[in-house]
Image 1: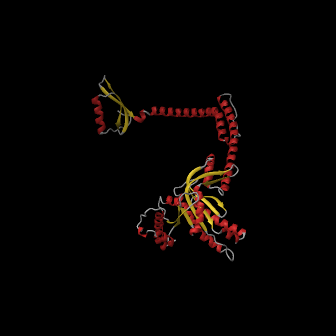
Image 2: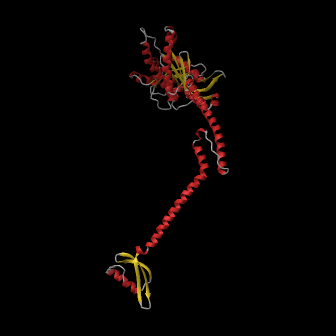
Image 3: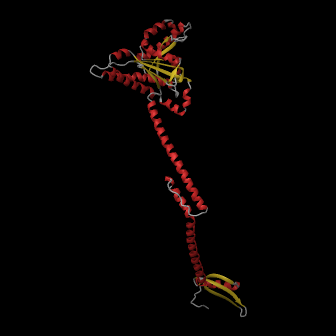
Length: 426
């Protein structure tokens, strides 16, 4: 029986008969007439009937769906009302804390204070915060004063550095600011010392007006000092028209010895441009400058030397005393640059690409033996390429002969002739 038309397919009839044969009872669901239906099956014993009451699932559960929907709406409305109440009371309770937070966001000028609204924990927090603001304001003013003093000191230091670098090497200034107390202690170390002097400067000064002479000297010193400093050298002092410089202090470099020689060669080469400018000044031109350079290598004492009122960062020692007269010997041997045997031995420890010629063994005051002196060039003329090796070998043979030692050389057949050969090559 049905309250509305119901068409049951063959498969659905087979399912119903299978349900009858199994005699299942209770609630169940299945598709019948193309729609999902809910069943309640049971036996009616007096008549021996098996009854299955069915209804569409959507109709059967419609009341339950309404109840569920109403419940969901009620829960949602209650939750929204509770949230609004919670927000209201939370904002009401946390308003003093919010004021503290707002004050912290504007704390940069330290002008704001928090209003104490309640006599409870939040009131204590607001009061404590106001005290903290007051203390921070004092600290901020101190920091600003210290920052201003630090900037002012930095500018003063920079100005002192800029002025001092004209008189004292930059490396020395950096070392002084890093450890001022260490600069009062001397140090013994191996360094290279260079002396440069203008030849016949007295004659030059007599032929020039004082202002022209000073102008020419300033141009000369400017070019020469730039060369020295570009090769890590330190200009120690000006001695009249002479320049004293050294390498290896206060900062030591692996190639200081080589750089000193290259500086000397650069200084001589730079004179070509300087003299060209001298010749072009005025109608008759100005005198040309020619220099001699002596370079030595050895142990010296380096440090601040002088009195409490006037001190110089300089070097003293036997190696300095040898470099100065070597510069004077450049006139005697008619060369632009001379180096000592000690410097020669130092640069020979590694490849240098320079041509070196042994000139002589000279007697130096304070030394018990003669000192070998050498001249140096970057490149040689074809004749010099042939003559310099012969000259060096001849000098070694003559030294061996004079010392009474038999010469060990491929030209030992010359016997005593190398001394004469040496003079002829010179």
